[in-house]
Length: 468
Ligand code: ZN
Image 1: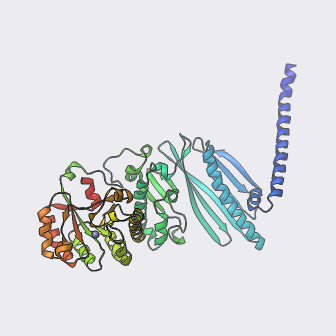
Image 2: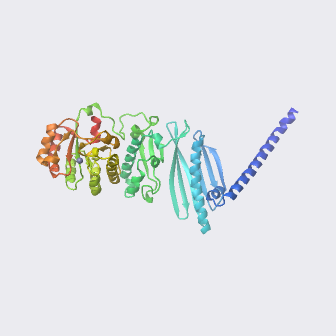
Image 3: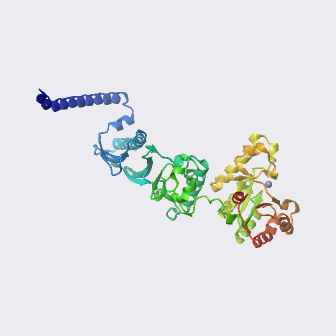
């Protein structure tokens, strides 16, 4: 009996498995038929019905399988490879992306084939895997879709933490800190502008909107060889000719912005934000020159030339109404490396305004500056220095007044500027001047000469605040 059972065992198994398979196929067939019947109008179902073969194989990376999906329809050819992991969330994100890319292609091809039976197309999705720090895989999927005469290429990335089985996005990488994202976004924008291969191909307005400090705009990135590589798809920031621009930034440079688990051990490397001043640096003398109420077409220009001559950096607290009127000057001030601060639109006494009006003064000016230089300000100066707790709480910027008033608006006398500074001079002083009076521009050289001879370094307001 025992022997007989053993002999018959496998046959019973095979029959059982066979029946289950047949039943399964029948159920699947009925389900599909039913779906087809119900959703005859739906493109998605049609796309899903296209026959293809999906196979899975193991990869060189533990825990990662490679899925291959090849079309069986010669008029709508595609070849897709993508990674699958043990995490359901990861696989869901991956297959959602793949399905959407495939459906788009199949639907477009069906439309084309309806018009022209000879229409040809091709979809290829392949991927590369990069391992980082024995913890993370970066998957970089490259999608090339041809439908008729157009070929579109795009990149989609997934960063997977295989220890915790989680997808990592930019928000996680930067510890959810919006300030860090702002710093990073500004860096990205500035670096893209410097790339020789993008010269003449960047579309300025697109670059501004696509590198705004929003998490969703920084979703396409990979960690490759100790660096963060950002991808920008075709025509998002540049002309089609530029292809898929990338920007590589070493993780050591980004270290101060990274969440603790991504920070790396490092020595003395240059970083995206300056480290807190060293003791030796603290012993140096610093001064911050500030110019309010501009820009002014003649006076601001003359001041910029003088600052350049003395290699001095300064801060310009601008009025929104004038910013709007002289955008080129604003750009010149910014490009020369000076800091721009917000000084309201109409120069009112803010403490006498209701909250809505205060915010409007700030926001309209902020927007006008941002529209021109593509960066937000970090500092705010209330007109007349008039502020209180309510104003400070309303305006989302560090409010900075001055420690030396040159009274240049009152005496309007070039020869009085230096004596006024000398009289009150101290280390880390913030000097108030106005770049709307000719006398201020005319007296400035004597001030620059004196401060330089006294060994003062000229800092922006944001910089000098670190020393106070
Ligand atoms: Zn003012």
